[in-house]
Amino acid sequence: MPPPRTRATLRHRLAELRGPSVPLKALDARALAALAANPGCRRRALLDGAGVNKAALANALGAPSSFGQSQFAFMRGNAFEARVKADGGAELLRLVHEKLDPTAEPPADALVPDLTAVGPEGRAGRTELALREATEARRWALLDHPMLALDVAGSPAFLEPDAVVVHPDGRWSVVEIKSFPLLDGSADPAKVGAAARQSAVYVLALEEVAARLGAHGHAEEPEVRHRVLLVCPKDFSNLPTASPVDIRKQRAVTRRQLARLTRIEEITDTLPEGMCFAPDLPQEALEAAVETVPAAYAPECLSACELAFHCRARSRAEGAVTAVGRSLRAELGGLTTVDEVLAAAHGEAGDPADPAVAALRRAAELRAEALASSAAAHPGSAEARAGREVAVCR
Image 1 (tube, one colour):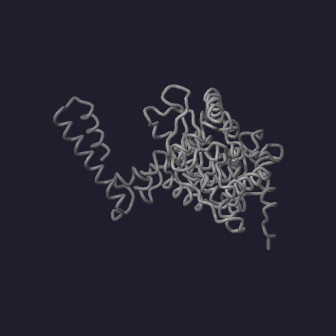
Image 2: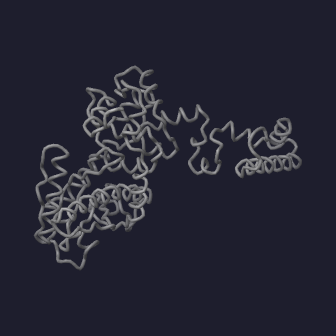
């Protein structure tokens, strides 16, 4: 009987998978939100849990990805965040008061605790202490880049929101600062949606902190607000403005998806000893290691995962229908490859009683009828040639 798995032995195993000299790449909220959006991908769950740098791995596999933020956008975002937090966060607290809690007293003398500590575990502990002290003080407090810990599939993830504000009534709010503009009070829905999913991860982590404080009897369990504040430049200026975003839907979805993730130890138990994802290994060895862990590729991965190009190439080579979208894959039932779909549509395979097979055959019949009608009306057209090809195939 194998010895019981402990957190220390799991960390050691994950370090072996990452490579003995490869530094850990910590999970951030953006990666965690993308992971929760595709909980069936054991490959991403393992690589993120082990702290593998997927961008370096993709380069070593010969399938580099353009996913990520440009250096210019990164510098612009940092400059804007520094402006919002200048003077002890006075402007940021003003926006929080105006948009989220206008009936409270103005934040004239807010606490700004020092969150410095050694290592992510130390910073997470210091953040928890600061939240407890600010909540008991019943006054405005601004926590600049606090560190929060969230258990993800059996592996801790350390998250760093832009800011967390404690209100005088003891409630907590997440503040997300982005460099894309709010034009006439609204922004790109896709970018706002991504920010909402990211904020939902922070809210879940804060709720775990609040539950611990309540369980230890330090105070009544604090409430984490489900309306976060999105701070962005106003129009085309560099002046900050803000909009409240209700993230209850994103929080519920993210919580459910994270709960469905296969635990990391269950995945590692299926892997051969000595397997490693170090980017300095030969490409053939890396490809074999990556293919040992099943993936769940979908087109959405292109905007969320550094390994997307590699997984897309494999998915296309295998003829997997997921390469054209999850919604289509769901409608096709047990037909998992393009060859199976075409065979079912042409009546060469498949159970006629299967609704997906019946729908495919009906669609093929309607297409053939449409091409035949068009060919009759226009004998020399491309449709006529296609109709003749269909007739020959039949």
